[in-house]
Structures are given as structure tokens and as C-alpha cells.
Length: 73
Image (cartoon, rainbow, N blue to C red; front, side):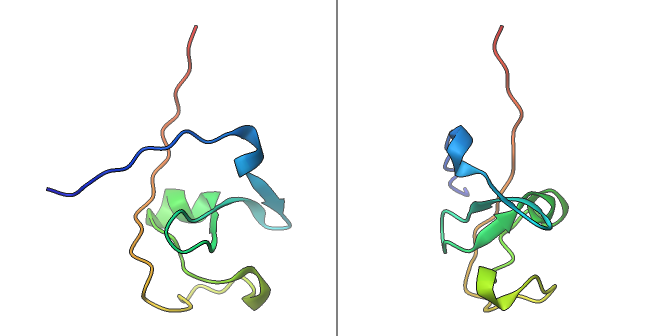
């Protein structure tokens, strides 16, 4: 069975760039852009100074990421 770790993000966990919002990947530290998480469900594994490319920097990051919207009333 695959282990799932949950974490609650604080407001300052999100960063803004020219091409959208991102958070730091909990496994490798690369920027995990919101749309990459939604579309691919994983970290794309590139560093910020390498630019946004559609290919992975290295295939070493195995983090699968998902977002869950929750609210309380």
C-alpha cells in the first residue's frame, strides 16, 4: 500500500511567478507549479533558474502531488 503524507499549507507557502503560483516540492525542493500539480499530479523536477521546460531536470523526484480544497464553517 502506498504511503500518503498530508500537510496543511500556510498562506506563505505559496509563491507567485510570472507563469503562476507554485509551492516548493516537499521531496526535492523544486518549484511545483499549481497547474503542473493539477495536470500531471507530480513535481516536474526543474530548478527555477533553469526556466520552465516541459522536460524533467532529472527523473529522480518521485513525489506525486495532489491538492484538496477544504473549508470549515
